[in-house]
Amino acid sequence: MYIFEITTPGTWLDYQDREWSWKMESQLSHLKSQFFEANLALNLFLAPLPSKSQMSHQDEWEKDSQLRTEIKQEIEAKYDSFALRENWENIHFETEIKFKQTKWRQGHIPKEFTHNQKFIFAKAFLYALDAFDKFLKVLYQEDNVPENIKDFYDEFGEVFPNLRSIRNTTQHLEDRSRGLGSGRNPQPMDLQPINNQIVNAENGGVLMLNVLNGTKYGCTMADGHYGEIDVSPESMEKLQTILQKILESFSWKGPKQHDPNV
Image 1 (tube, rainbow, N blue to C red):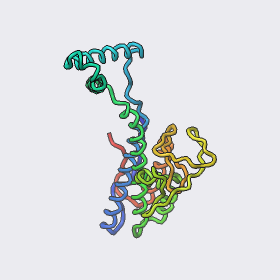
Image 2 (cartoon, helix red, strand yellow; image 1 turned 90 degrees about the vertical axis):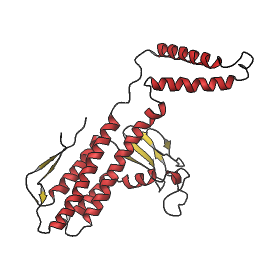
Image 3 (spheres, rainbow, N blue to C red; image 1 turned 60 degrees about the horizontal axis):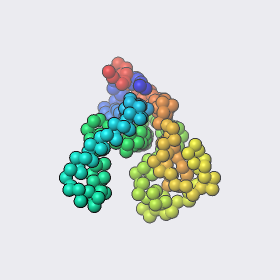
Image 4 (cartoon, one colour; image 1 turned 45 degrees about the vertical axis):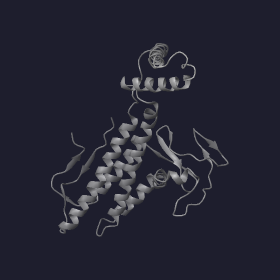
């Protein structure tokens, strides 16, 4: 498990305007909350998928075949011998449904669940970073905040250059899937060249949505380029550095605070 730690230099902000201080403390608390949400999403993303049955492929196939036969025989018993051939498709369909339902009750996880698990956690990581970005933008626009908060906002954009466009695509898949860009009246995208471990399209024309390339979650962005966000400890380290510098930019009083907690 990856646990990224943060030290807040004090307990309360040390400024005369207590109302302003309370407001800033709230904004900083939101930043920390999104930081640890990203940390959790990373660990869920990197966790191994549920293990499959330990029995051999041949043994499992034979066991499943026997189960299907038993279920089919139970269903066929409802029909007279003259109706079996006529209802073959219905019998087969009902057998498959009951077979799957039996397997699920035995603890087997649907393939669609295991396939989508990492995509869900990758997007949770993406959305946590995006929320961090939005809170940081609000923070630097507040009156009287340290001047370098804007520098950290710019640094965040440099560290995660495609974040905002990828998030925009994930929230507007209904447009991207039709090859449309962003805006109230989205226009057709000019799909740009892609060259990675998944696709080599030097002449462009390839639309990619909801893609995992190792630890990198990617998609075609509104401008037609393919972008990725790395769901990795390295990304968390960069976020950790930015958050720590933000906290240290303010004046604090009271004992230091260490997060996360046990």
